[in-house]
Image: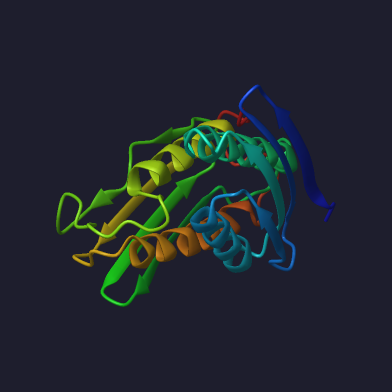
Length: 203
């Protein structure tokens, strides 16, 4: 199977980002975004998804983390889309439930070409999180996932069964789960001949 890798560079007046990605790697990560929580979460995503991932980002963090956080999602989505090419033979779908303490994250993905994400849904409560970590929040996570899903062309659904007030405890199984589900979806099915869509194409 050919090496499914991509390197994407994006520079704006607000951010400068380089992402290097290999799908089906060894889970090696080198992440430097300037956002400590996001660095940690992307390392988990890479490790459990077996993606080799380098992310180097510089942004206007003196203002806030919004632009950098969202733009990393954009560039990561572009990298996955480029690495997957025409999506020939991929399984396309992936799903997993991942627990951490009293939180369980459910992540479902469909690399359909139609990017969609409607926010993390809390099953037991609207949003039990009261403890914020290093300036990060569920709102920032939602911005990241929305940008990632739309640029990749992925239908992404995330729900959490949790009453745990800690942000880290809730986000960690989400990022682990996203890595595992995307690993499933991007694997090549040896039985599949061609694009996994009755249309014959996934944009």
